[in-house]
Length: 141
Image (cartoon, rainbow, N blue to C red; front, side, top):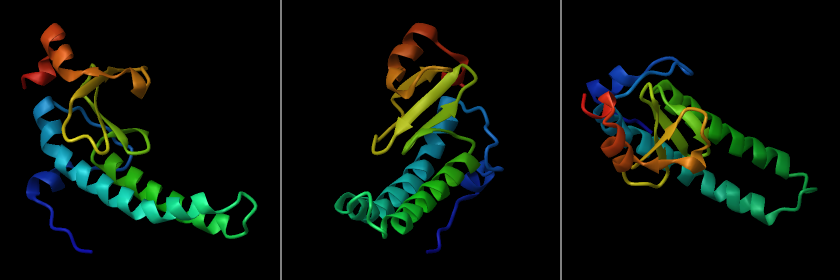
C-alpha cells in the first residue's frame, strides 16, 4: 500500500521514542495522520482478535496468532512514536504540551481531553475546561 504524505506530515516524522512538544494547533494538524494510522491498525487487528476469541488458551495455533497481534501493535506504536507522541495504551496517545498531554483515543473524532503528567488515561479532563481555567500558552500558540 502506497501512501503519499504531505510536506507538513513528513516534517513531523522523527526517531522512534523521540517525543516533542506540541501546541494545540500542531496537535490538531497531526491528528488526521494519527487517526489514519490507528484506524488502519485497528482494522487489521479485528480478524486476529476474532480468531483469538474463538480459541482455547491451550490451542497450539494461539502463539502464532498472538505473534501476529503483537506485530500489528508494535508497528502502530512505532508509527505514532515517530510522530513524537506518547503511547498510553492500545489506540491511546498523548501529544506532549510541556504541561501534560492532549489525549486522544481511537475512534474519537477530535482532541477533546487533557491529562497532566503522572495521571492515568482514565483521569482525562475535558480540554475546554483546561483551556478556560488555566489558559495555557500551548492552547494559543
